[in-house]
Image: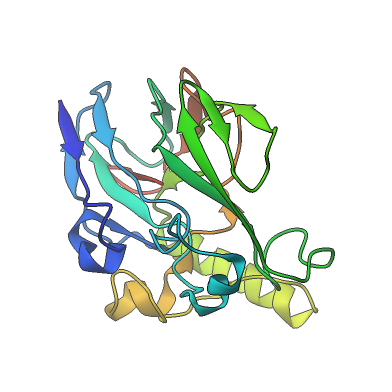
Length: 231
């Protein structure tokens, strides 16, 4: 079975040939797969491996803030054509043994309510997550894909960029194209590629508990040979 294996002791920028953190159709694929072929993708966490079990809430202020949701891939799906509907089935999702939950001031959907940094570490074992910061709390394993999708076409990328720039101009919130901490770090991908953190028509960061083991993701294909990535 084909796979993309990563070194979780390293940041994405140290293994740029294994993934990316911007959406753009010019990102070269890491491997190719036939329609119906199974592949294994090892993924990094949403902080790009920055949050360690020994860290406290005060350490969050020093983290790189524009690396969120690094993706593994892309996987080139052979024979996919614009107008096709790509179906991705998640056969299994295996969590790591540790995890975290955080609030970072100015970030997230609840940024108006939570203005102080907060960090909880989780230990995953035997299908449950527990935390020394939350004694007496036990959460069942409901692992799901937070970010997954296919590369947009250049026309789609341009439309998204204009839509989000207009939103910002009207006082809304969006994360516009920004080369800082981009992977790949240079060229059109870094300059015009869009952040992987918000959801869009290619799916992206949906944080959807429905994208679990046994579920299926359906995404319209916009470029020849769909480029699928996950994180």
